[in-house]
Amino acid sequence: MIDCREAVRRMWPFLDRSLEPHPAEELEAHLETCKRCCGELEFSRELRGLVATTSSPALPDELRDRIELLLATVRDGGPDR
Amino acid sequence: MVERIEEVTTAMVEATELPDGTARVAPGRLFADVVHEHLDRLYGYCVHVCGDRTDAEDLLQDTLVRAMRSFDGLRDPEAARTWLFTIATNCARDRWRARGRALDTVPLEAGEPDDEFSLFTTIAIEDPFPYSDELHLDFLRLFEDEDVQAVFATMTPAFRAPLLLTTMHGFSCKEAAAVLGVPLGTILSRLHRGRKQLERGLWDYAVRRRLVTVSDES
Image (cartoon, rainbow over all chains, first blue to last red; front, side, top):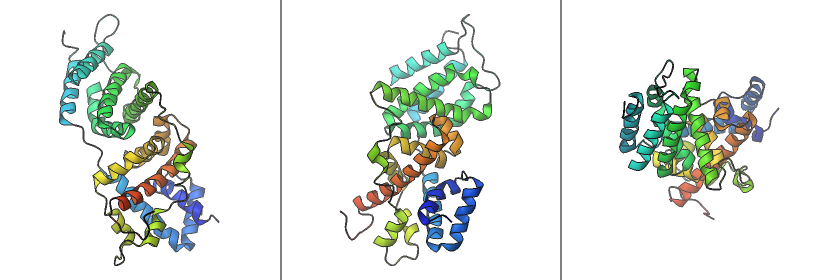
């Protein structure tokens, strides 16, 4: 049986679905008996969601326009073609 | 910026030319299509890696030039996202190295103090919203996008990158390991330390901005 410290350590990998089956089963067994860790898992899920839904900095319009221009230039084979 | 773009354009045009002067034709997909599909997220990643928008613009352009040069080597279109982010990481590593810094440095003090910190427990103990039925959720609701971005900016780059790759950009841990060029075990360790640093950063930010009232701010 894993303790709370180890359970907390496994929570984000569990939410990422990157935890191997056996460690995941151990975590689930711990959660069955630990109300506090159930609360922390739900909080971790929400916190992970906060990070996941935070908008990345937007590409500045000026930079986007310049990149479009250079991509078009490259696609057309350069200014001398 | 104009000079920089012209320099990049020249480099990219040169990169598309074969030795006989004819244009290199990328198989299957056009380079521009691949760039268009991932450009916005790639820029966001560049900002997160650099922690600075001006640097991020240069990093993005370095990345596009290097990607153009090696586009012929991209055999699997499905791997384009990992491929572009890997190039961005390598370009960032080169830029940091040129400045005498290391992108992947993990200072000994960076993770240790935060390892025992639990945001969940701290919120429960400090109880910043005494009348709330959703204490922990109310804490997270304090944060707008710019607040979270500000906390990201305070994180150690070596911890921030795995966290954002897996959580914000949707990479698996194995893909993040490939992007960053480190073993899977290293990613898992840095994810844990990054998460702890994020928790500490969110709490410190809330206290510093007086978004919460606590018993002892020291």
